[in-house]
Length: 437
Ligand SMILES: Nc1ncnc2c1ncn2[C@@H]1O[C@H](COP(=O)(O)OP(=O)(O)O)[C@@H](O)[C@H]1O
Ligand SMILES: [Mg+2]
Image 1 (cartoon, rainbow, N blue to C red):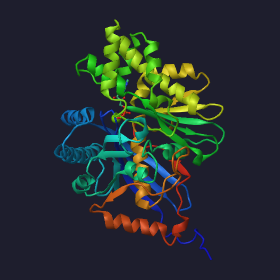
Image 2 (image 1 turned 180 degrees about the vertical axis):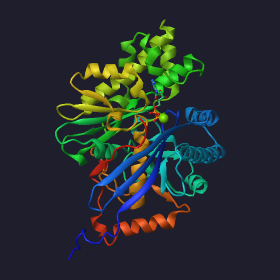
Image 3 (image 1 turned 90 degrees about the vertical axis):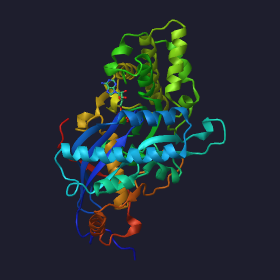
Image 4 (image 1 turned 30 degrees about the vertical axis):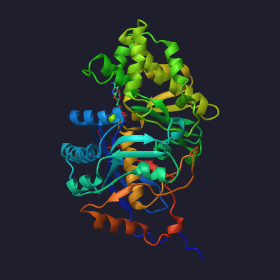
């Protein structure tokens, strides 16, 4: 007789997690401190955001990592050093975050997890020449993080998802769906980081979510601005430069005919396909035909904006999306948002801060949830429209000084809940945030 999953979960779950994310833009490390609680394995998971912060990426290291990615040539020595240095950055960021917000790593943090810096993401080798295979590498040594904080640390979520037959990215559909799936509205959660991605949440179906990368978010814009200001400016603050220029539609159309944009979902991408070089080439070509730097930035910004609008039309749900929740640094750029609103006049476009999540916090929050679920031993909801529907627990664990205590806590939470009935979380309640917006 199969046992019933109700009775003997001995004690509620209560774990505090620091989630971190160093995105493609390499502007910094986003950090969240989250309290997860759950009365029993069959009850909804509760999530409460306690603190949020952004730790700037040290300039020297950013230049070193950018050099490595931009040239796609390196040495084993350089890779080994950068892995350690990135681990040290996350360790330092975590200490800074805790001190600044006056919480203790020893008593107020049970787990730390996130992604290091993506070094190489090759999800669609068929779009390239040569004999590549699907691969992903992000780096920030979790042994350094755990040793330097005492806290059990997790990483390698993306390659872990890739091992199950998917692309390892964007990896946020489950969080987005748990936060925002609605019974009667089709919603999307859009993130405009270095790369832009969105999750589609078809109405009334928390497990019907799917996500993919639309292409460049800020990556080209940042590259163009750096190019024209000799590295003095890193991005087009509030779209000021782009606003002054004229869009060259023929350039936009030509770029958007490229293989990535027309490729069907599932698809994800990164700097390997949309690197600084491509942006600089677009600028050079336009300058040669008499365009101004502002025209170039306006045009490059439109590439992002139009690729988003096109993707909603091509791969959105039947009937379109009723609401789009916006996050990521690019949601501050009116040249993107206004164009998208123009193309989707009947869609309400709302910053994700409307549900008390700071626009820069969502991806770190995604890693906090992945960290919790990995340690608790639950798979995440598998998004639709991927190559594989194989569920699995994703992530890798480096035990810290607190390992025994938290392991015992999780064992007590499960009690004798039958292993074969362990399913992904499909109900989550977001408790009011404690952090300033
Ligand atoms: N006020 C702003 N106006 C325009 N763009 C902004 C603004 N603030 C941030 N950004 C853009 O957002 C980028 C960082 O976004 P983020 O969500 O951190 O991306 P990633 O996840 O790739 O690190 C910056 O590089 C910049 O291009
Ligand atoms: Mg960032």
